[in-house]
Each structure stands twice: as structure tokens, then as C-alpha cells.
Image (cartoon, protein in one colour):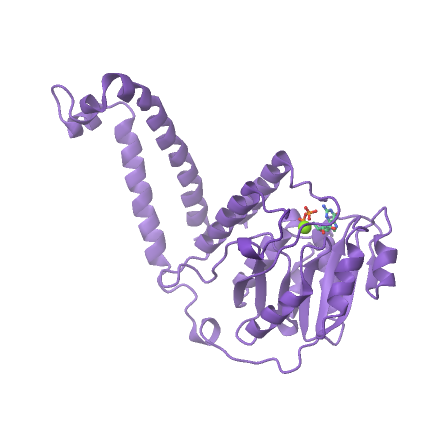
Length: 340
Ligand SMILES: Nc1nc2c(ncn2[C@@H]2O[C@H](COP(=O)(O)OP(=O)(O)O)[C@@H](O)[C@H]2O)c(=O)[nH]1
Ligand SMILES: [Mg+2]
């Protein structure tokens, strides 16, 4: 089924380009010769024109074949993940939430104080763990000063590795809910009040930053971010498509790392964050997507909720604000979704 999904997406891309190219190439002749001739022909009709056309009939043939394959894919997913014990309503209220917040930080001295203080003062937060990814500035010192437990990485192995280490450490605490958040001041601790109640009905709550009225002016949501995140999210949804509910998960954002997860649910995942052969974190830059997809594969129940999104403090570390970098990350994410 994974191969089927892969082929559907790849062939969609190829056909999309073929269709657009054909239309563009023919626009010129339509404009000069006139659409009438293409549609009715001077002597022959539309179907004869298609039949005798060099490429058009093959494009239409491939399009129809693709649509049939899509229908087959969708029908095969009629009963996808419909186990009532796992995928329908459950209610397990968390009576006394105790949170440990995990944050990976790299050269975030402009934002780390605000971030740590904001989370520490939230009534349900018991501890904040900051994994300092070998920063060259005062990130670690400032985080410690504000009351976070700081883990200093000896070597920078990418941000996914830091989250993996932080999450493992968080499991050792007395918290019953583990949160992940960003170090850049874009998240607000008060959103936890909206996220935690959802955990009564699911295992993990992931945020979406796509609701404009929840975003602060000057935030990182460029057109490319918004559209890219949206379509990649829909691709994940399509990967886990189910005919009755459009997918086992409803997603509009893939890159948001502000999440909460029940401790016992996280325990099912933690040994799968690090590749034991290489020692690297699985997913790399696509870690947020990996977390979501791995959880779905493990039958965890996930819900996405709209969160507020502040302007970033300090410079972007991924430089995803720049177009080229943004496209590069988009392609890394796309490759990950297709190959995972
Ligand atoms: N780029 C990068 N970010 C890291 C690293 N380690 C931790 N981080 C943190 O991971 C987050 C990356 O965030 P992201 O929202 O993807 O990009 P940004 O906010 O535009 O920099 C930042 O908060 C960094 O502080 C690292 O090695 N490289
Ligand atoms: Mg960020």
C-alpha cells in the first residue's frame, strides 16, 4: 500500500506537468487558429481530433488511468484503521495534569528567557528541560538562570537529536504529560489550557499555526510557509486516507512542534527516535513529521488544534525565511513523506 501511495503521488506530479505543458503549448494555437478548430475541427469532430492527436490522447488516457487508480486506492481504504477499540471515542480524563516541557535550543539567547519563564509560570508545568545544541551564545546559561534543567549536547547532531534526548529525559520525571515547544518565542504557554483538555480523548495534540487571527503580525507564515505546510499536511492525510473520514488524522500544518502527549503514549515511541546503528536522530529536519507519522503507525490517536503563533524572537536558525531554504526544507519534507 505504501508503494501504491508513492506511485500515485509521483505519477500525479508527472501528469500535472504533462497536462500543464500541453495546455500551455496549445494556448498559442488556440489563440491564433481559434478554439473552434480544436474542438470541432474544420472537417472532423472533437473525438476524431483527439484520436488523431499526437500526444493529447495519451495524456487523456494516462489521466483516466490515474483517476481509476485513485478510486481503487480510496476504495481499498474503506475500512482503514476502523478498530473500535483504538480508533473511536474514548474518554480518559486527566484529573491532575503535571507537565514537563521539552525544548531544543540552538543560539537562542534572544528568546530563551522569555520562552522558559512563560512555560515555568504556567500552573500545570512542573519542569522545563532545555537541550542546548552546542550553542555558541549564552542560551544554556540563560535557560538555567530562568529555572530550566539544561542538558548540554557535546556535539551538534541536529535539532531532532536534541528533541530525542530531551523527550527521553522528560520520561524520567514525574510528569504525566510531556510537551514539546520551540525555543524561539513563537509559542504561548497559555495555549496549553486549550491543548490539555483534548488529551481526555486522544494521545497527542499537535498545533496548527494556520489560523491567521491567531498569528501575530510579523510572524514567519509567509505565503510559501502557509501553502507548503498545508499541502504537505494534506499529503500525510492522504497517506493515511480512510474513505469515511478523509483520513485517520486531519492536518493543516506539518512543522509545528508545540505539542502535548501523554506519558504512556510517548513511552511507545521513544526507543524509535534514534537510529541505533548511526546514533543519528531518525527524520532529521523532518522530525515533526516523523513524530506525527510514527504515532499514526503506532495507532496513537492524534488531534490537531489551532494555536497562536508569535513573531519569532532572534534570527531563524533554519533560514527557512529565505525562499531557497524554504524550498529545500519543503523538498526534504516531501521526500520524507513519500519514502517513510
Ligand atoms: N537549525 C537548527 N535549529 C536547532 C538546532 N538545535 C536546536 N534547534 C532549535 O530548533 C528550532 C528550529 O526551529 P524552526 O522553527 O524549524 O526554524 P526557525 O524558527 O526558523 O529557526 C529553533 O528553535 C532552534 O533553536 C540545530 O542544530 N539547528
Ligand atoms: Mg521556529
